Length: 445
Ligand code: NDP
Ligand code: HSE
Image (cartoon, rainbow, N blue to C red; front, side, top):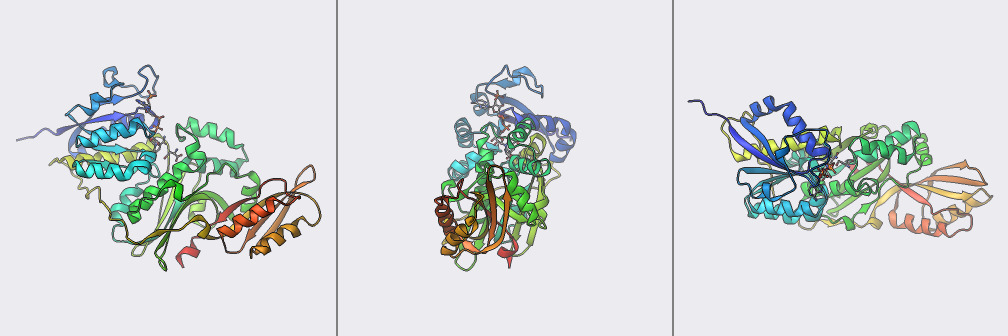
């Protein structure tokens, strides 16, 4: 006897860039998707803030509502997608859905970072599930990869470009020399930028993703306040040009490195000069790139669009399909591995502080163009045992100049002290700024 495929009802919270992408792309590939999953899928309710808002994706009017309870209290809805963003209403609806045993799919990295530990426990104790593939690197299936495909590895280094907006801005600054602000306007139109754009520009969004990857790889919840988190606001056109001359590109990088000698972990997010010969240095525009080195697999690299409607909705739909498979249907042609593992914290793993970081640095000094300036700066740096590897100078107007140096390996505490001391010199026009130099080989050898 023919059994008609089971109907799975989904409730969406949020119908902005990502929410509309989920609807649009489920419609676009509905026949194939339902065929693969062996079920019928219906987005039966969508919660928004403003019912009068014009949307590029049109849905039946009676599906839209402003009342969260119409999803949360509907026993027919088993899968809830939280695509609102933020940590207020998003937390309330996630909590409520998990307590009712529903499967929650999210793209909300901010919420996971702030409340992940609690929400994963809540899911576990209520027999619910909390899926988050879209929360890191947009369309790249990095969560599933680390959790499932690379499960047999210990990780020594995970690093990469984790914010599409910043990479888009840096790429266009480098290629066209356009202004930061005008490129940001374009990124906003393309749907890459967070509702609170400071999250992108100040590195917080990418730091959230680094924290999630740290949890996945090491079972270790790191607090944002305990890691270095710097965005791209201070990167100038001069820095980009000088980096290119020296054989580097500037990228906003998240870096998680484990030092096996003392079982310590360094977790950081900041702009870095990376050798232009590295594949990740060539990951441009909205693309993200993540390199994962495991002791069994070696080094792997994943590249794809890190933001935007379609790439992100691809990851949400992937989680929806895992959820469908968990809900049990005999007709599915796809077998999913267990989608969530709960990690025990790796006992004894300690987080290194910013000052303990050892790196090479690029430092830019805005100075008065007078004799003896370089000597004064060198003296200060020598006093902190910092030696220069390269020195360049660029003349500016109004008797000003830029001195740009790179250093040999030194700890960050020394660089900070030296820069603070140089700032006090009479010949200095602005606070010196430094960018770390990141060469993956130094971590893998
Ligand atoms: P948008 O701002 O485009 O959409 C947010 C949606 O949530 C809107 O439909 C809005 O309703 C609704 N909403 C907001 N506040 C409320 C509220 N108080 N009550 C009811 N509905 C509300 O955001 P995105 O789609 O870009 O992002 C959604 C999530 O996905 C965020 O967590 C983001 O970090 C994440 N994400 C985004 C990516 C992207 O490229 N855009 C990529 C990866 C993750 P209304 O439309 O009526 O205003
Ligand atoms: N604003 C984020 C970015 C969206 O630009 O990467 C994807 O998480």
